[in-house]
Image 1 (spheres, helix red, strand yellow):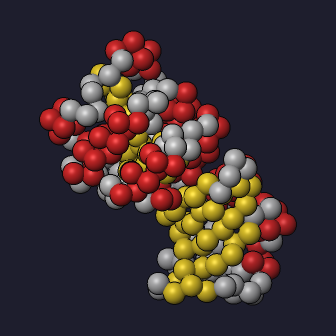
Image 2 (cartoon, one colour; image 1 turned 90 degrees about the vertical axis):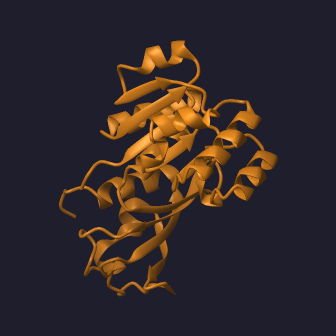
Image 3 (cartoon, one colour; image 1 turned 120 degrees about the vertical axis):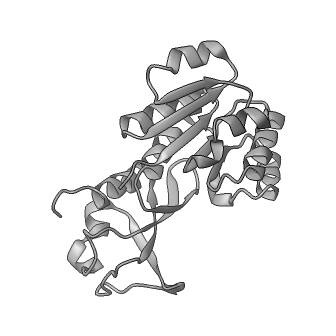
Length: 225
């Protein structure tokens, strides 16, 4: 499977935490910031780093921003800049846009621009690291941070659990996360302990962020159960 490509716009505290974690997970990362000093410092760490204004639509076209699998708007306190950047990315056809939001107003505006509520990220350095692990996991579908400690996520099952059920796997006992539903052929199934997982199933689970991270890494690792 080819590596996912990520573009991170903004090298603040959150952006830096996200970038460092994506790099540690061997992702292809483009970093964009209009501050040359920040770009110079991070250039050796990432696949590519470019100094440009993210509200310059022609500059974003030149670097083919729409070719990236995921673009994260991680800009700082300038809400207007974040909103305009999001609008431009949407106009350029970027499919997966995540936005670090500063307030309820900011969140409402970027939602109006077409950003999914599940793709809104509230600023916190640790959140950047957690989000990176979930984004890189492979078959990630949705991510919603419920509060500072708990999240709801959904992802496509891996070969590791296909044909097995919750009783076999002991997921809640081993990882402390709860698989609350399965989306199968666009229908929601509430699984019993003996419901086997099937190819293309999407599991919906909730739990503490660090435990979800542990489960996600296990689910997509090659280690035996």
